[in-house]
Image: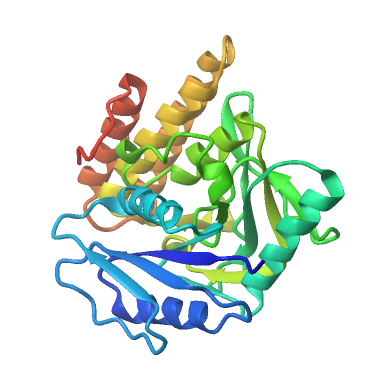
Length: 305
C-alpha cells in the first residue's frame, strides 16, 4: 500500500521563498499528494503550482505557525493521510529527502520495534554552513544535541518543526500543538510531549534540507568572533516567553529553581547582545525580553504582543 503524504507550509510576506519551498516539495522523488498552505501575509501571495497540489487557506489575521499547523493536522487526519510534512517557507529539502525520511521511519519500526512520532532531516543554514540541531530536555532546559553523521539516524526529543515528517497515527495519540504559543517553541513542546507518550523522534543524517534559521550576524566579542541572532521585538518576546514557560513546566522539583536561573541568565545575555550589536529599537527589544520572561513565568500565553 502506497504511503500517503501531505505537506504543510506556513507563509508570511515572502513570495520568493514560499515558491522555492513549493517547487522543492513538488520535485521530490516520492510524490506529495497535496500541499496545505496557511498564508498569514497582509495580502495573499502569488504562489506557483504546476501540478495542481495546492490547498491554500488565507487568513486576514496572522494565526501563526501553530494555528496553521493545528488546522493542517486536523485536515490531513480527516483526509486519511499517513504523514504530514511540515515546513517554514524558507526551507528547501533535497530531492530525495522525503524518500529517505519514509525509509528511515520504516527501518526504525522494523529494526527496533518501537513507535515513531517524527522523522526529521538534517537541516543546515546555507548562509553559515552550520547544522541546526534538534533538542533534548536535560533536567531544567532544552539543549541542542550534537549531530551524529556516523549513523543513519539518531534520537532527540524535539526536531525543529520545519522538515519534520509527522506520523498522523502518533498525532492522534496526543493533544494538538498548543495554539497559545503562537509562533515559537512549538517544536520543543510537541516533540517532547510525543516522547512522554512513548514515541521516538528521529533525525536522519542522510536526508538533508537547507533552512534559513533566524537572522545571524558575525560579531567580535572578547577578541573572538561569534554568531548571534538578530530578531524583531516580537520574536524576542515570544522566544523569551514560550521557552521560559515550557522549561518551567517540564522541570520537576529542584530543577524548577535551576530552570528559573537559566531563563534569567538567557534573558540577561540576550539583552547584552541587543545593547552591544543591535542598532534598531533597542529599548523595545529589551522590554520584549523582560516582559516575555515575566509572562512566561506567569504562564500568560496567547497572542499578546
